[in-house]
Amino acid sequence: MVFQDILKITRHGKGVYEITDLITDIIKESKIAVGTCQIFSQSSTSSILIGDTVHESTKKGTADFLAHFAPNDESAIDAINEGMKNIPDNLKNIIHRTSLSIPISNSKPGIGVWQGIYLWQQSESKKSRKITVTIMGE
Amino acid sequence: MVRHQALRFETDGRGTYNITKQIQEAITNSGIRSGICQIFMHHTSASLILCENADPDVRADLETFMQHIAPDGDDMFIHKSEGPDDMPAHIRTTLTQSSLSIPVEDGKETLGIWQGVFLWEHRIKKQKRKITVTLVGE
Image: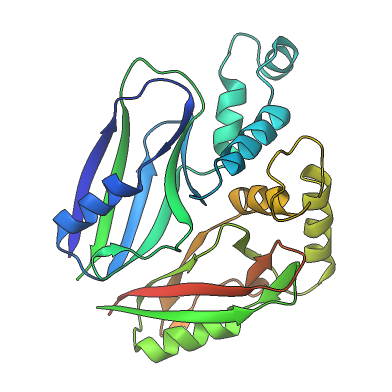
């Protein structure tokens, strides 16, 4: 059986948002007890990642690393492609991921005790972000 | 048809471990001949990679690369509660894979001749790690 739904995220700012509860609700609604769940971000500047749920500082550390790797300063923007101001945000997204697949067991996300599912928004957006959730199983 | 199985590993600390054989065993045990095999890591400081399996220097170089871009004990990191390798282990995980999907054909993982599935332990000390293998197919 295949079940599909689209999550609309209406938080517009840059940041890291936990979406584990939203994914859990969709899995419950699908009535699929065992299988796989693919979470796909329909944006080139927001990614889906597994992260540590305990220490907030791990998110700060990852964000600092990304800022160091692809700085949003003028020199980096000019060096890559003049005028395309969100190139560093695209780069951050490329080294993270557009989609994540997780197992489903007992009608829940079959993830680790300290794992959560996070949306990383690398840029501001006036529109809502769409995430397609596709569940396959029985 | 959906089948899933938990695999447990004890690592000797930082490094790559070839788990291709164990994944094939899980596929064989499932009885699924054709479909998709999802491999999911239940941790945020260890990850999965598909990598060249012939020359171990490739994995040694990957290790060197990671140490270069996310050095242990770097002043940039604030999350050090479990030691200097703590935050780098989380970053290495976000830069590699928490889940892999590989095709299954004739009851076998259809990897390239020079591809192997590796568990990459990012913590320096030895750890217990859990992986779920979910097969969807017939």
